[in-house]
Image 1 (tube, rainbow over the protein chains, first blue to last red):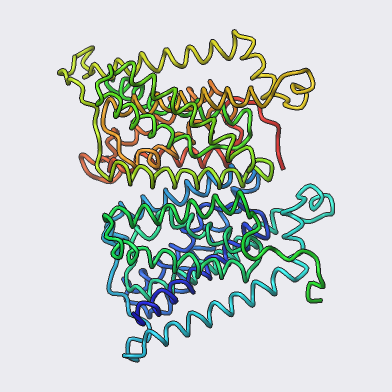
Image 2: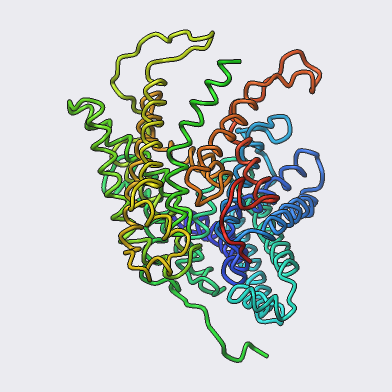
Length: 296
Length: 297
């Protein structure tokens, strides 16, 4: 039971990092990205590439971040002419194209079976390896959080928020919206790929099933429920959602429900949670702090 | 060749009804409602249940379409009117959430298996060398009639004039005494019916399972955006283009390109064709082939 708790907390930390990445885009800059999971996938397949090529496992990280940066730049390029709803659909399509290609290119990616046998982090520290990994992930989460806080409170962060609230005004004041979008996508893509790299070395398995679009919507629910544009809030959302999802099977066993219940309950938790918060508490559990000293 | 044209036609018919519905709603309330593809699945399931209960197929289909139309209005009033007051992107996320909830409902009521209509299966006819089944003909007729009726309503009735006025300039339309909320809900009702008919015709020729909606999502969006979101009949053209692209991708022998005699891309690449067209269009011609939307930031 304790091991399971450690496991869920570890995954929640990694999803917290992903939620922070999405929060930079959607929360602070107003970029409605439905293809976030593909950026994460760049990280996991970067790790898989290093393993398949026989490189040092750490080389997977720059490989993953490089792929994610390219994809992020492409997303940003697409966003130049599109309003947010169109861009959401476009990014969703690209993520699906990538997932389908990865599934079909057997030789390159192992196809639907994926690639297994990646080295597990801290495998030598048994029986305390789980705790060690959790400590690492929590430290990474804290660092990414600190970085995001610094970023959104900087002058650049203010321009991100201006772009979200009043794009015309921002442009008239001489802000280069394309550049802001590019930088935000590059930074958040790198963060997402980093989470993917850690995730790949946690599960020791990489496959296209990890890249289905409901995963993106799960991260969205974390952001919306936790509190869009509040970094602490989205981390809380990530933990809340991961634990809610993880304990569904126990409810099923306790109440002796059919197996379909697990999948359905997860859909309802994500979809229902999203909808309920959008309707009744659109600012989430921890609303964005507007104004204030901005730490400067 | 005729087989190719016919395959394309049938596939575009699959997409056309839902894409037209999506586009029509978008023209009024300015957000792409993802849940429409799930309305199609609701329509198929309800029609199937009614048919299994002993109703003739035509009546079952019509009742199911009416039911889905009402359901669409209900969701619009309860959910989307409120979310749209915030932002269209928020409404888009809300419609995604609604589709997930509907998926869960399907999963709990019907389970993960695929269902079929209990219809007689007749051997395929041969027309000009192409294999054509009864149900394909029925689908074509149903689609043509519903799209024809929809076009008639849109262009030949005073209701249609009000719809077009509201779509072009909602504030002005309201100022001239048009009840824009009523007009919007009528369009939402019609879109629900169209989507349901789309789902039912799909189910008649194959089967319906809970992931039908998610599989249709991006091709339908591609067709609607290609036709210019908000231009209802442009979506028909969009559907034909997407269908042709999908059929070409899966039926072309690319063997010479890779140095083999015969090499066909796996069928799972068919959706990639439509998504790729969608992305290319969004890159270079974001407002679609025809039209009409005001340029945005």
